Image (cartoon, rainbow, N blue to C red):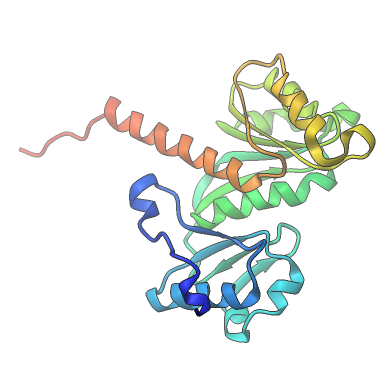
Length: 233
């Protein structure tokens, strides 16, 4: 059995759910990833790869490395032609600390892969609340927010109590002691008294970006129902 027999790519996903195919690289060998990229190249398709560490990226075939936009911080790669970016940014990504940036960047890169501009607000956690308040009006300008925070994950609750934007919280595994691994952050957000916060899994910047895109698609669909195109006579 060859590596090409070990996967089936979902190129119909955009028509079905409005989200592009993505490849979770953790657990896959460089040989398997090379075979996946060959299949995409045959169709002239682009792919997003997540959780692709630097050593595994370096082990890919040179032809694939040359066609790949790799980000070591987020451990993501965009293979093939880049989509044009559509703005202005309607999604804001808020990271509590610098250590939360890899998760925030994963969300940002996932959005960029599908052509959605986003604004990153880094290191605005509650330990220095002035860092958040001085950027609050900029943050409020985005109708959808992704908020990534570890430790006690207080930031999503604080932001959720200050802005009207739809809010997707991402607990991160940043922390030590009782906060190690991100479970405390997850539980804290789930227990938040700020109403209407959506929560994704620990370190799941990709999932948060996909949730944000679903909301954008829903908003557009609702707008088209409220303002149907005028029929031509």
